[in-house]
Image (cartoon, rainbow, N blue to C red; front, top):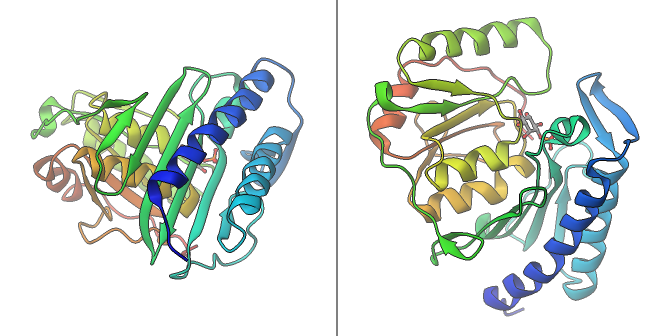
Length: 271
Ligand code: IPD
């Protein structure tokens, strides 16, 4: 199979805005919420609907491709060299449910375990972040660049608590925040891993790290961040492995190193 990335990208840019409309139509209405792992981890009918539309539409056009989706994948993720779509229909489901306008469709296309295309679309605020490998990163069609901040004491950092409620994990996360807040301008927890990453990519924040996220939260946005020129790593400073449930995205490697030297890990079972 010959893969034409520009053709796939154009198709995606037809499909994703239609799904964004589905999210927007549901945003201010009452939602049907079902718990997943605990009371703070849930799914709505919109998550399921958007994932179904994306998967079915792409399967018709690309019948040989594989799919990994937040709401359909069960058990261990099958991540191979084969062409695969990695989908989070609503990244920031909690925000979606609470009408906090910071949630997005995240969709990525990988071949040989390498990101080829990433699209992150916040349809509530009409922000479409996108990248094709080797072709730069864009917000609504305009090139984006990170802030370039190198010093922790001039930086704004984003992190998250995530949806887990295990006491030991929360203690480490709170302590990391405690250590950082003494040294940076500000800390933010905004509720969408994909958008947090894109905000670092476009210079709206300087660094984002999180323990406990999944492959579908980071698959698209990490390509966008790399294409924008960000440093994207495992929070221990090693190379990122998108199955390992953790990420650090920084505007510069200098800032990354300062944060890496201060934070302690939270270990999760890999995807
Ligand atoms: C969540 C968001 C959130 C992060 C959680 C994720 P979801 O994704 O990315 O920022 O803290 O760990 O689960 O579940 O809303 O797609």
